[in-house]
Amino acid sequence: MANNSGMEMPRCAEKLMQLGVSPQLSAPAIHRWFWRMGLAIQPPIYATGAQATLVRCLLLSLLWTCSMWLIAGKSLSGPLLAGSLTFGLIVALYRNFELLHLRKKLHLPSLKDLLEDNAESI
Image 1 (cartoon, rainbow, N blue to C red):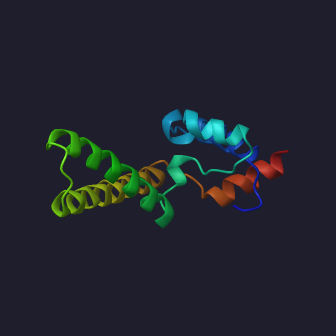
Image 2: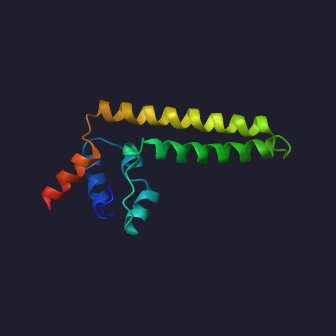
């Protein structure tokens, strides 16, 4: 993926939508914004690796911690932080398995194959 510019990703997203993937999983607004900036961010349906899991886990944990901090009287404690990290990890792993299942269900090609197909069609 290091060689791919952000300009190839919109074509991949269009192809994914033709294959039946929803726009939220093929080209959400923030991804389109990154692509316009020239960053080669994978479409969310292909973001199931360790880095994507870590990012999802940390973002969900931060959101959950802030929510519980406001609800619980603004006191941070070890159990709150541990529970938030556990929540974030469980939801991130569930999301990864959900995306993997959807890729198999729709019989999607790998991202590498999709990029090669786009390069050949140019």
